[in-house]
Structure formats: C-alpha cells, structure tokens
Image 1 (cartoon, helix red, strand yellow):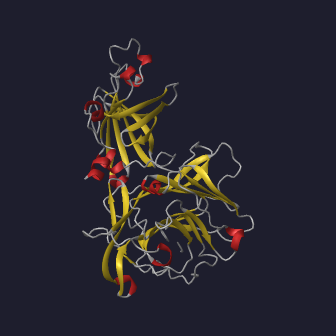
Image 2 (cartoon, rainbow, N blue to C red):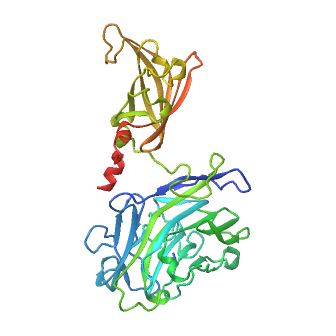
Image 3 (cartoon, one colour):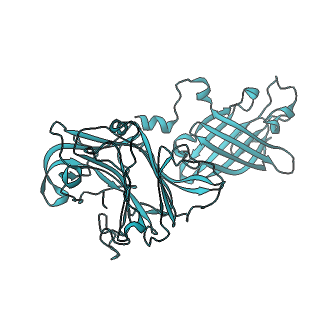
Length: 442
C-alpha cells in the first residue's frame, strides 16, 4: 500500500540481552464499535484505480467496520455508491480504511498485530502498514507541515499486505526517495500455501534508527540495515484496510460479494529491563489495564488454600469522583491456625480489629496509608470505644480483573506481608465474570 498520543519512549535498547518488550499501547477491539479516540476512517483515500469507497460506517446493517467478540472486522461489500468522501464519485464497492494518525503514533520499538483474512477469491488487497506522520492525507492537522508521499515525513512501510491474485506469499515493502538504502520488497512465503492467510498469524516489525526486523508468528522473516537511510526517524502511524481491484488488486472474482479482514489486536511496545517478553501482545508486560470504575468494588478473599479461613472481609468501595478506593478489612485468625504468627492477617489477631486503607490508583496498582480501628467494628465516624490511627501502608496490584496481590507493612515492626486475593463471588460461582467483562459481553 501507499501511504494524539505520540508514544515515543526512545530507541529500544539495542544490544541489551536482558531487556524484553513492555506494552506502551494496545488496541484490543473489546468494545461494540470503533474507538474513534484511536482511529480515523480515511474516507478521502482514492489510489491505484481501486474500486472501493472507504466509509466511516460501523453501525448500519451494511457497515464496513464491526467490532464484536473482541476483534475488529473490516468488511468490503459489493454495491454501487456515489462516494461521499470523494465528492460523489461512483464506486462499485464500499470498504474500510482506518489510520491512527495524530492519535496513536510511534517512534521505534515493536509494532505487532494479530490478523486473519476470510477470503481467497481474487481481487482483494488487505494490508497492515505504516506511514510517517507528516503525510498530506486525512486527517491533516492544519499546521502547514505536510508533505506528499513518499517524501521524507511521508515515507511508507508495509508490514503485511496480501494480493489475492498472488496468494502464496505476503509482501513486506518500503516506499521512500532513497532506494535500497532504505529497504526493498520481500515476499515471505506461506508454508501451507494460500490457505494460510485464512488462519490467525501475528505480524510484527522491530524498529530502531539503524535496523528493521520483520516477524511472522515471532519467526524472523526479513532484516534490513538502515544505517545509511535518512528517513524512518520520525513518528509513524498504523493503517488497516481492505482495497479492492485496481492496478494492484487486480481482477475481482465475479462471485465475490463480501471480503473481511479480521484483527485481534494492534500493539506497540518498547524494550524494558523489567520484562522478558519476546512478543508485543495481550500477554506482554504492561498490557493489562484494570478497570477500577467497574471492578474495584465488592468483597475479595485470600486465594490461598492454606489460609482459606483468613481475611474473608476485604471490601472494596471505589469512589470515581476522587479515583480513590476505600478498603475495609476485618482481620482474624482461623481456629485451625495454631499460631497467630502463621496467619497472613496477624495484625488483628490479638484485639479483633478492622484495618482500613485509602488507596489511589496509578495504572493497575493502588497504594496508600493503612489505618487500624479497634473496638471490634468499623464505623465512620468512630463510635465511643473505637480508636483509629495510621499504622502502615498497603498496595494492591491487579494482575487481572479478578486477581490481585495485596502487600502491606506495619510501621515500626517486622510485619510485612503479601498474599493473593480474588473476588468472593469467583470462589463460589463457577460462571463468575468481572463487571468489565460482563459489560463487554453485552
């Protein structure tokens, strides 16, 4: 193909043997429509004598974008239309083309997507590719700093594109003004032939100022030395589209009426010495984002069989107006534990106390001061016979919507504890779903 939160964490740590990938941004397509905070529908694109009209339709019965079951489908449909984005020019198909320009842009790191295509019929041309961010194509910022393709600032990299009329391989390519110094076409073959495109594969590019390396399913398929290349040193954005026919797509199968490109995720990672991940996906360090507004409420319990009778009362109450989670925790030791020192909740073992915490979120971790309230109950304000005082600190790291690690430390003591917790309902209900998962499912 040809053709704001800029995520620039610097060049990745070339030569570091210990660093792995850490997610800076990931699009999971887990809603019920396109997230227009991340994407623009490029409705004014019209290249290569292609026959499609690109739309922004993600809601009508004939929509060209569908987000469902955790994936994005870009759907090309046969059907004549006077294309609104092209001033009423007639096109015989509609399709979708999304780009992340001015919204999600990247400089160096690993860019990865998990993709499959649903059709083998001739005439389709799906692609996952990138452009430098000063190209004079929609959306245009209006700052006067716009250049035409493929000049510096508007150079192109094709991470994956596939011609249905040449189906045994896919294409990696570069378009710029500097020839072989800045990359050239490669066509990695599909081991199983054309039908491989129907299966899920990950396609990725690792990018530094001096080199680009391309992967399919995390196996290296191409490597380019860019030390003499003067471009690809400024932010780029992602494009996803299905083109139909034209100079490169070729003759469209007359029996084809619908063609679908399906994308599971798109992610950008930078290297981090705190990670050993070799991929950039939903399992990579930094990928999970806890939905505190939906999942930080209710009762959680220790997820450790050895202490199944302990600390059954961690109750979370999330206050959205302050982005604050209030935690109340009635501590005691189960009679089966012979010594209070053996319990993870020894703080309250001797005088039957409540611990409370006021935690603020930073990503997936909530931290804050820990308070003790004696007197056998918790009330706010304290009732006669109660005493509340700050005694230490607590942190809760959410590793999934239904899993977390609690850590706390009591000032002036050697008492430092860490233990896993899960929602109480998960323990008793085999069909449990987090509130965020249930909302996505509906």
